[in-house]
Length: 142
Image (cartoon, rainbow, N blue to C red):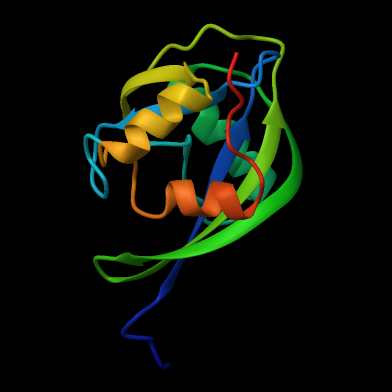
C-alpha cells in the first residue's frame, strides 16, 4: 500500500447570505487561521457527502439549519500534513440568529463595507477575499 506524503484533505465551506446581502462569517477558534474571519465549514468525515458535511459544519459552528445549493468554487490551501481541498457551496436558511459553537469564537453577518475593512486589516483567512471576488460572491452594502 502506498500512502501519499501529502494527502488531500477534503473540506467544505458555506456561502450563506441573509436577505440584505450580508455574508455569514465566523471567527475561527482553532488552527488553521485561529482568530481570523472565514466562512463556516470544515472537514468532510469518512462516508459523508459534501452536502451533509456542509449542513453539519454550519449547524455545529453557528447553529443554523441550511439548505445546500450549488458548488460555487474550489480552493486548495496548505495543511500541516497535506493539502486542504475546500469546496464552497451556496446555502440559504430561514433562520438568521447566529450562535457560535465550539469551532467559532464569534460569528456575524458582514456587509460589503465590514468585509472590506476586515480584508484591509488582514483579519480574513488567507485567500478568502480573492476567492470571493473571483466568484462574484462578495457581500453587498446595505
